[in-house]
Image 1 (cartoon, rainbow, N blue to C red):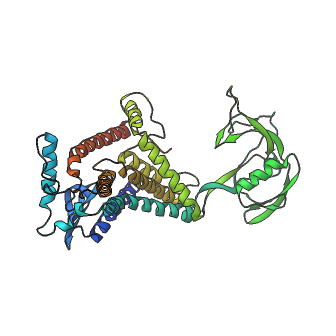
Image 2 (spheres, rainbow, N blue to C red):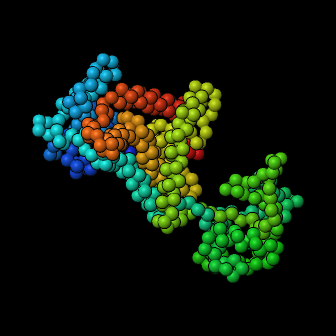
Image 3 (cartoon, rainbow, N blue to C red):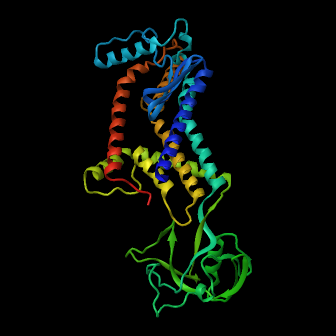
Length: 438
């Protein structure tokens, strides 16, 4: 039941994101005088609709997108000089112009989208993607500064009974030859919260870890909170060889041997807790997420090839692979149904909001690809139109007419087919070779 609830929450979140994306297009378009005849969330058969003013608002059966119908998206044939229709592509473009022109009511040609200035067209088309970016910023702010992100706490989750040699598995059983760990020798227990160490008030695990490493083999007073009472004891760290980490990864020599250094060691491990961060950290997190997503888009052909090899071959899919809506739905179900120590309602909410934020960042980046039918393709068309007019003005020539974006419709059809094929491949891969959060 929890799994299904997670999927439902995701679907609702995606629908809301899509709806707000389309509002990002619709609101500026209406403010600029463009007639918006339809606002729809989803595709396919209409489940519900209601007309308010001059716009029909509705919900369709397939929740995989949405659209707003802006009247006059393509210039009329007269506006672009009645281009010839000698080729198949020319005929497709002509049909697109005719369909667009039929939506323009008599006397309302001035309200057609193609009549807008270049800056206004760019604002309308970027309104959708930037709405997704805004959603992601809000969600990540709630997670980072409201709920918190998982971090090491000052409460101990484990106390080692012996000093495990460097390079050995941390979970290895203790032997009679192993030295008793200082934390266990001092009577520290799982669940203890470290209050002070060597007279220094402890506020974070990083602070405590640094103090322990710098102590050396010197007896040090330590105070912990246990069952509401403060317990004072003395620990004597041992100097042990421990791996050197760089960016969270153990460093190794050219021969593959781990690089170690001597540090003070108690044999205690922290628990995890949600820790709120200042709002000032949000822009960096969002910027990093956008950059990573853009990197995925740039390498999309290679990543799709890897997915195909996994789906139709014996290769396993790694955790960095791209996934479809099926894979995202599985993630949502796992987030809602996972039963693990320390993973409670707050962690589930944070994970779900983070997943929705990631989807919105993906929508933001993907829609900026400069190809029709994506928003980025319309932006490029508007910028090209504006550039032509500026060049003509600088050269003292007559102002050129609108750019004939209908000529790009055949390309848009091709892009749509590619996107549909990509979606089908990813869905198939997520069914036969699923990726799990665990």
